[in-house]
Length: 461
Image 1 (cartoon, one colour):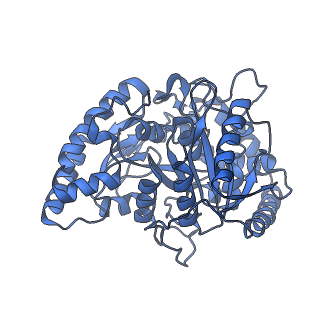
Image 2 (tube, one colour):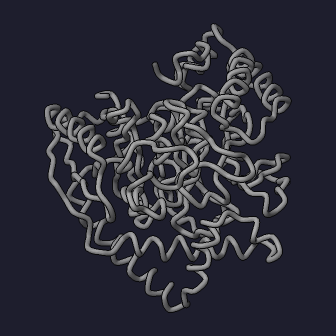
Image 3 (cartoon, helix red, strand yellow):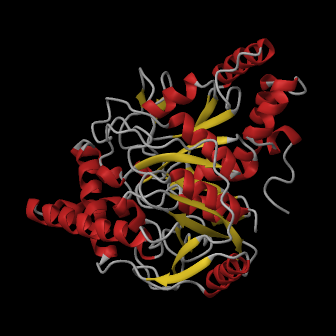
């Protein structure tokens, strides 16, 4: 049984099917929104995926979308589609809490750029999804909202930091879900919850306010299908002058997704994370995937990433970002912040300006080398995560001798350092029936090619 099996029929549909039904009049955004809101309440009681619901706003948006579809004037291919936002992204009129009790929530006066683009496209905004405190780790629990649990096994973690978004996607509590990813925070929960997550090319989706974690941080979609993720990404793509880090040159469109048969696909195979090992059941599921891909005619070449201590390099970036984030908390409130975040922030605060400049230089050297390496391939494939979901409420799997999430998430953060697009789809199951993810990485700007390959690979599962 999957987490979606007990959901009402409208909650099992994706954006592509819903909007087809909206167009022919056999289903309305109001019906779908009401069914989804009921599902959200049920899912919340079981898995704890939401921190805020806007019932009135969702119903008003659904009625407006219904009128547009009846008039034959929808705003976009996602008009009237139930959508959620992670609780670290600003939504006008909503109070964003960042998963913390250390600072008051911010009641936004304006939407973040991605949210504004979704709203302009007619998305029905349901509410905010859970995150760990300030999104600092790759599991989702906090003193503010408690533990967000895995819909395949509530005793296990949902992953993070966009854990609430992935749970909502997996269970039918919304169709499209906005997450953030600074070191795997979209892709890790997507893998643990058996859904699709896409970290775009850096700058494709505008970000404002700027993340304290700097230019490793991205915004992107989580959904149940690659097609839906691509629709959402296309809507959120664009230039916004509030985001100075964006490049002014336009990136190629994502939709309509090109067809990408696996026959002849040039695949770089990345099997070894920067730190630690791959769990045997994940390795077995990945090997089975690669076998099916090879049987379909893909050309597979094993590769190693350009030489660099990527675990240590990412820590320099992430821990200095944590120090910047903690510095925004009033000193008298910092003891209320989770101990793990305070510990990495203290490490980051000890770094010098020269340390950070050297880290940026090393990052540039690594990312340029990876750019050159992937020029000879269509995509690079890896396990999404080196483990399946472990105990809820823990930062690391038990009895593995690990101290921090970065030690088991090594297939994620190198892609953030390189600012490349990456999609996670389900890649089979581990020994306990928990999803194992497959990651598809591509060259910067090649989001459409990555998503197209991911769609073909997803069809093999």
